[in-house]
Length: 118
Image (cartoon, rainbow, N blue to C red; front, top):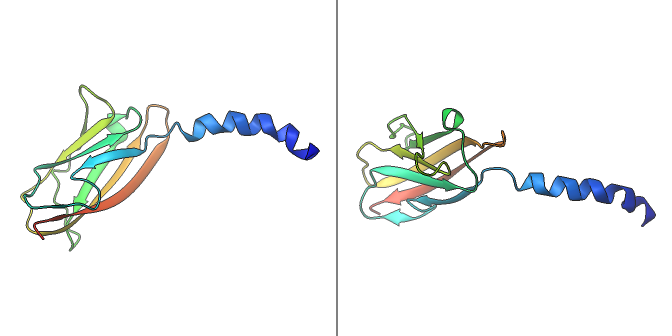
């Protein structure tokens, strides 16, 4: 037990930095959800403010074709929110991929799917 005491301050200092990344809080369409009407955009909410120039969203159909406008935007009123417009979607499954840089300079990324009309 004595060997753990010198490391305790290091563990306490490391804990706050783990929570400092921008993680996906929720999305519209919701993660894994099925929607009857095709959305016109994907909106993602994060746990921390984002750096717009280094944050992206891509949406692909089941064949891998890109179906977003190619230009994701952050804010302007809330820098924790990022949107991307979509082309008209047919029924099927779509994969959303995101990569963001938070204002604390940490990068996070992830993917999820949603379905249209099935």
